[in-house]
Structure formats: C-alpha cells, structure tokens
Length: 168
Image (cartoon, rainbow, N blue to C red; front, side, top):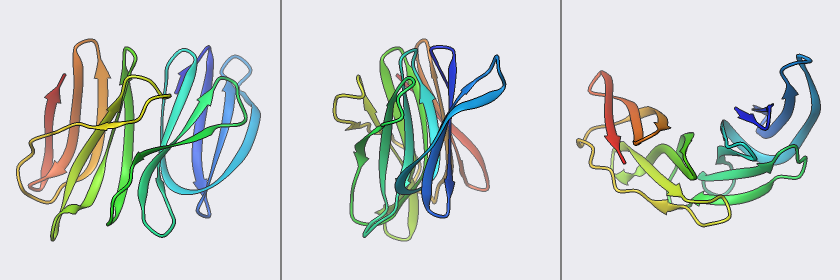
C-alpha cells in the first residue's frame, strides 16, 4: 500500500513480521527491516502519511493488532485493534477519508461457527471501536474489505460462496 509516493509491504516469516519501504521508481526496497513482533497474516493500508499493518498477534491468545508506520519510519508503534478470549484471525484493512476499518474472522462469537467482526477508528492515534454488522448465522471465512467515497464493502465466504454487505 502507498504513502507519500512510497510503498509499504509486510510479510510473516517464521512467526515474526517483517516490512519494507519500497521506492517504485527505483524498483528496490530501500528500508528493509524486521519488526520482531510475533504475528501472522499481515494486511496493509496507507493514507498519504501513515500506514497500518493489521495482523494476527500470536501469544497466549490470538488477537487482532496493528503496527502504525509514519512514512518512512523504521520504528512502528503497536496498537490494539481487538482482544478477546478465543481465536481471532485473517485480518483485512482499508480506509476511507480519515477512517480506518479492519475486518477479521472471530472464531469465538457463536459456538461452533466463525463470524466476521469489524472495528474502525477515525485516527490511528485513537482506539478502534467495534462496528455492528448483521450477518446471517452461518460459518464465515476469508474476509476482504474495500472502502471509498461513501462507505465500505465487506466480502466474505459463507454458504459455499461469496457474500457481501455494504455499510457507511
């Protein structure tokens, strides 16, 4: 994802997250680093001045957390997005205007099924707040979110196919 003409890419290697700022004009990474944060499944979104890497935080529980990068910082700050008993996984992140939106799979919402959970924040310096989403009661997986102008679209797998819901 891009910020100020630079791209931030993130990955997981052996349970630790890594990231690099890439200059698309030079086609090389010029700031490569390991953030040494235990995590998996990173997803990136950027504004013009900062990026959010949402990821599954690995530890005593599996929570959804984020790394806030101010371009081209090599020292991200860790932020909590959602912590609860039970496994959380597969985050995806997008933004519209100044609002950051994160969706993920919550394996703890209904016993025996997985659900999609959402949280948003008007600024990466503010706490993320849950967003109520009314989805049919069935097991859900593989969320993807895209936001723009008037709202967001959440796409997910359920009922043996793809489903979607739009929200402001």
